[in-house]
Length: 512
Image (cartoon, rainbow, N blue to C red; front, side, top):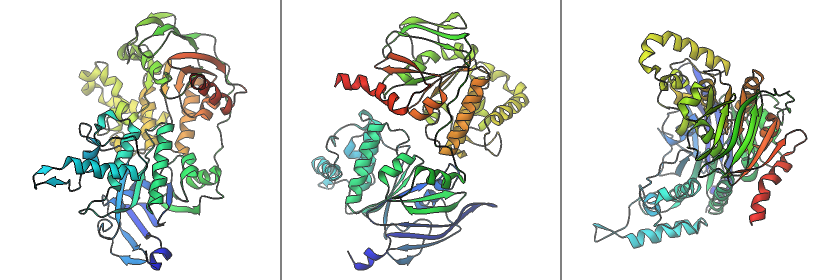
């Protein structure tokens, strides 16, 4: 390595500007990426992060940019010249071919070794793949494994390995751009990913890590840049920074470290009675929920939180037990529960909740369409537009109109559309699975306010969350689950995050 490459950043971007019409999305952005470093890029949804990544990948063309590679000025055409520097992109929506092997997915886009010019040399292909996996410390993924059999965390590692593998026809990657890679990962999968990213750093790679999760930034990053309203407002080493420093830079205002604990008087009227329900994942679940109560479901991944919500909405069939709404016995199904004013917001909005190529109105009114009213739509279009506007205003949706495609919205605003749909029928019972997953700190605060406002109107809310502090702050009671059973029902007054963590991990410790 030359002395020059040591003295200059691997990549320097200056005066980066991008506008759409009269709207300036990026304004004189400067970004330096050092070799052998992890650089975090933070910003609220809509700050300009996605546009910057699209410019780097060539999807969007900048209005103006100055670019240097190892101190030398280079021409930035439609995308950064891959002959000068190798850049690979890992997105949260993994593009893998599930029916192919790990080796085949890793070698996609590469010149796969052949025998006699026509036959694939599988032995050599597996050997190349194994070497690449081993170099990143990934010892337990077999190149012959079928991708569909891997969990989402292992698929992410395979994608990284595919970017890392070196073959004669492809420029070796020097920069890895990861866009919200942990959005769908649990904690153990996230920790494993971080281990591999640190291995990449040891291989003298530079990583641009885009996220909104502050705890990840402090665990992983060497440097951080914060985008707000299309401008870099903070550039710093991570050392010496605090969460409050970053949130203030991201939002332009001071956010409270935690939501003030709610002290609400819960009505004694029962809205829901769950009596010894069981299925393949649940074991004799028994509890009641009251009018205006916010009831939390806590537990580790696989504890039964999501399964309980799915059973209550009728997405998963019950084998035994009884569910009562307002004192009346009911057999849960998605249609019946909607008709009985029960709404559900699932964990994965992109795959389970939204139709990404459809409009705000279509997604907000989706349940209306599902209930047989589709034949009346042409007679009710004016009504639908008006109601969509009221529903989206209720959740403070930021969009250009009800016809805007949902994919154009930020993650936080997509989640608000989910809330607008759920509140369409003014539910008596609202079921929430990870309601703030994949949204930035500012959007979280807004969603907290929506949840509180809805409960204060008399709606009963049952929510599952992996965010312990939000559970304690929002909920009146918390049910602790493990292996499909309710272990404890606890009031949240006086509860701490440490207490809750201990209760969730205790069953695991006993088994171990």
